[in-house]
Structures are given as C-alpha cells and as structure tokens.
Image 1 (cartoon, rainbow, N blue to C red):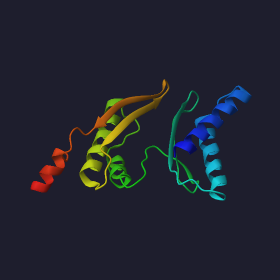
Image 2 (cartoon, rainbow, N blue to C red):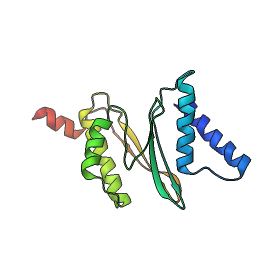
Image 3 (spheres, rainbow, N blue to C red):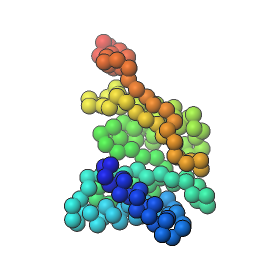
Image 4 (cartoon, rainbow, N blue to C red):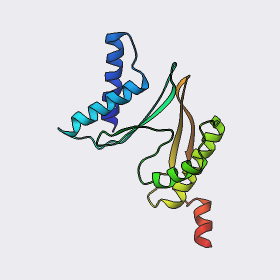
Amino acid sequence: MVQFTEFIQKNLHLYQFRNTIPLSTAAAANFTRGELATALRKNPYMVNVILGGYDKDVGASLYYIDYIATLHKIDKGAFGYGSYFCLSLMDKLYRPDMTVEEAVDLVDKCIKEIRLRLVVAPQNFVIKIVDKDGAREYARRELVGDSAPAEAAATVAA
C-alpha cells in the first residue's frame, strides 16, 4: 500500500513539474485507476483507495478505487471489514451540508461501532480533513489501556 501510494504521489508531482499544471482530483483518480489496471495484468497490487481532493472550480471530490481498478465517484465511503458498520451509519446519518463538527461526530460514531462490533478492530484512528486549505490531520482517537471499550463491557455484562 505504501509503495503504491508513494508511486502515485511521485508521478503526480512529476506531471506537475513537467507541465507546470497540477492534475485535478478527477484526473488524479483516473491516473490512479489506470495504474492499478495496468498492474492488474502484470503484478497486481492488493490496494483499495479512497482518494479525496479539492479543486477551485469543482469543489470537494471523493473517489473510491478498488483493487481491480474500478473507479466510482462517491459522497461517502469506507472499505474493509469495518465498512459494513460504517456505511450503514453513513447511509442513515450523512448529509451533504454537514459541518466539520457534525462530520467528525459521525466518524466518532463509526469508530465506536467498529470498536464495539469488529473482533479484530484497530484501536487507534486518525481523522484527517481535506478541504480548500489542503489535507491535514484533525484528531486522533486512541484507546487508552488494555481493557475493552466501556460499551463492549456493558454489552457483555447485559
């Protein structure tokens, strides 16, 4: 995953260096899809990608690219085992006009659900924001201590 993302990042920078124009988010997503499609016939990467970006003329964009190079423009997304829980919450609670605080609250609900229901759940999460000001880390959600989350303990006790 790291090798593939670094390859894409460096090639996007090379394109900008050669042409003095950065690629749009849609163009970067299509380039990424093309590279995955090419690798699929040689030595496939087992990588799923959620690519987000902000273009001045288009606004925010989000794309989902799976390991067999299928590209979809989406409003919300997740992948992996935890996605079964997150996508159902997002379908119910996501709105296009959400504030950052509301979106982070939705992400926190997804994290809580993953920790509660997924047997092999990761315990540490990083929340990042991509907007007109660029990409940045917003917050970290780390589980402190070796005990199970309080919600899981309460569910087991009940």
